[in-house]
Amino acid sequence: MDRKDFLNQVGIGAAALLVPACIGGLAACGKSNTGVPTVPTNVDFTLDVSSGALASNGGFLVKNGIIIARTNSGTFLAVSAACTHEGTTVNFVPSTNKFVCPNHNAQFSSTGVVTQGPATKNLTSYSTSLNGNTLRVFS
Image 1 (cartoon, helix red, strand yellow):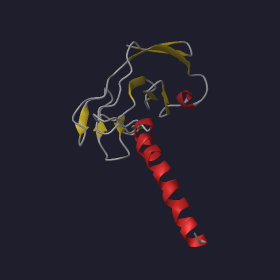
Image 2 (cartoon, rainbow, N blue to C red):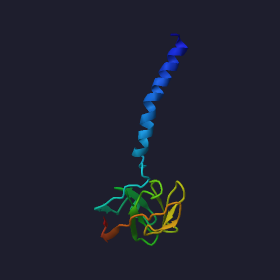
Image 3 (cartoon, rainbow, N blue to C red):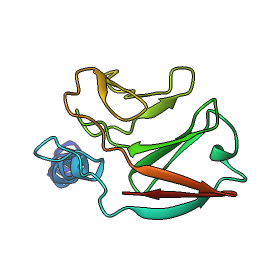
Image 4 (tube, helix red, strand yellow):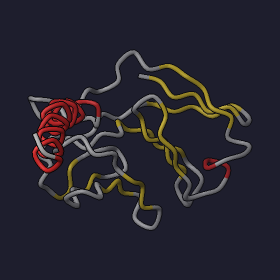
């Protein structure tokens, strides 16, 4: 076997090892075989909103599969973070109080209702309660 044949064999072997890892990586990226993202259930956690993304109006963050946003008027919203179309994490747009998927531009109202496809299923909405600087997010 000469050097060229050896390198070809090594390359084919490496590709054979990497293909299953790449395919398996789709599930780790929030994609499932059914196309339906997992929705958090039995939610009950608190956040300190005195600093960080939620300290200012228009800020948002993702925690435990939920996107929590502070509107421009200072109220808090919480919906499941995975777009119901393909599972991409949605963003919050404070100027419209909407959640938008950066992948295919699906749009959801402040309560998670689909306002523009391709998504056809609503995001799950969660309750919020503010006590001082502690925000509770719960089902």
